[in-house]
Every structure is written in structure tokens, then in C-alpha cells.
Length: 335
Image (cartoon, rainbow, N blue to C red; front, side):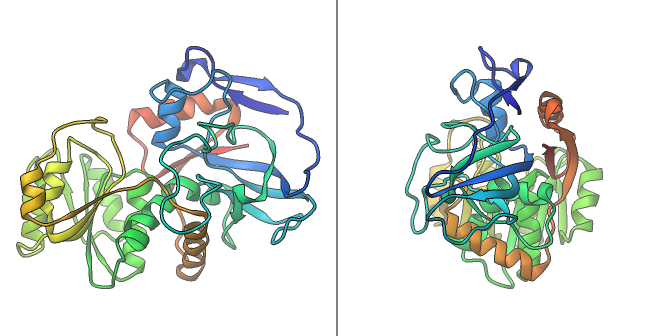
């Protein structure tokens, strides 16, 4: 069967389409899953580009969605024909965070889903949402669950709250959709007026072009009557955090998710302290969080925003498209 592997040294250009052996039938506690789709995340780009070191020959991609073909002995809750979606942290079942690295994350510490068939322990998957395509399901493993945990699990989002989302990547758009579905108002930023128009069409109450308005934190405060937002989906990191602190209300919640502007930098700790804000770092969520999110998606009818879809053999082109920054929403891979 076909797979994509990372070359040595790792780079997008080093990605290779290869033939690998079929993994065979599942053993006790395992599932055999035919993978039909994956989707790209910033973490995946870090792995394939060599920024996040992984073993040469690693099969990338943390997101995977497909159909159960066979069930091993002792597996409860799954049967042949079930549509399933992968878990970012397969061994984090429930409760507080239980892992602080990527050693068990598919596509990083272990092989991922840029391949046609996998045989893995059943805890690597949950059921996919009813009515979702495989591509739509594949957007949930990383981006969807990150937004859910930021707002619902950590943020305890309530109707009437205000949420600030930065940019138009997968996490930010999911956060916008979830916040609106749960009765919150949303302010969204982008450097593109065309993308801001799309954000308004998705339900954003206010939009800000951060290139035209580099002091966008003050603009957010103005739009909220001087109070600031209750929640910030902070995907930028050190380059945007000072403005996010300005934008967030006294006692508000900043979900630190991304490092798009760098992996380290100065933090205005005095401002954070004075405004008594909670800065919460997070990486995706547990299997139970994923099941809870999927139930919510089925009830609300939210569907992911998909920018484009590439074939598995075009995975390098998909990552080049991601790196260009022109996409709006998720980039998917058909397998």
C-alpha cells in the first residue's frame, strides 16, 4: 500500500511516496482502519519541515479519518463499518492533562496517517460525527479539539460571553463557529479584508484588520465598551500576546495555543498581573474531550470550513499551500 515518509534531512521537499507492507489483521484490542482522509496542522508542518525533529522515515500526519475494516478480540464499542477519527493523544483518556510531549502523538513520536491502512489499539480512535464526510472528520483531531478545549473545557464558555479569535486558521475558525453556536459574540482579526468578509459571513460580530490597525488590542477594548473580551484564542505567541493581554478583560482567559510568531519571547508580565488574567497553555485534549465535542457538533450541526483538498501523492504541495498563508480554514488530504 502507499504511504508518505519524511526524508533525511527533513523538509517538505524530502517527502517521499513509498510502498509499504499491508499491516494485516488486528490483534487483541486492535482495530484495522482504512484511512480515507487527513488534514494539515501547524504541528504537522513543523514535523515535515524539520523544525520539530522526528525520526527519518517517519510517516507524518496526526489527523486521520476512515472506516473500521476489522476488530480484534476484546474490543468494545467498535464494529466493522464504523466511521472513526483519530486521537492526538491516544493514551490520555480523561481528566487533567497527562502528557507534556509528543512521544505518543501520531505523525510525530509514532507513525501517523499519511498511509492507506493502519492496525492500532482501539484507543487511537473515537467514532466520527454522524453525517460528516471523512475529510470533515479529519479536521477534528487537532484543530477542532484544540478550539473545543480552549473554549469549553478550560474556558467554561457561557452564552453572552465575548471571544477574540486571531487569524483564519483551522483552530480560530472552529473557535468562531463553536462560540457563535453557544451564544457568544466574536471579534476576529486578519490581515486580509477578503478573509475578514468571510469571517463575517461565518458569524463574526466584529472584524479587525491587524495590518491596518497594529494596536488592535485597543480596538477590541473599544468594541467591548472598554471592558475587553472574556476569552482570547491566542495562536500567534510572543508577537501577538501583548495585544491579546490588552484586548482581554480584567480576570479574563487567554488560551495560549500557537507559536506562529515564534517559540519564545518577552511577556508583559506586569500587564498580565495587573489585569489578573489567566494565561492557559494547552495542546489539544483527551479522548473524552473529543467524544464530548463530537456530540456537540452533532447537536449544533456545525460543519468544518475546508479550504482545499489534495491527494496523498500531493502532500508536499499541500504543505506548500499551507506555508503560503493564503488558505482559509482547513487543508485536507484525500487518501
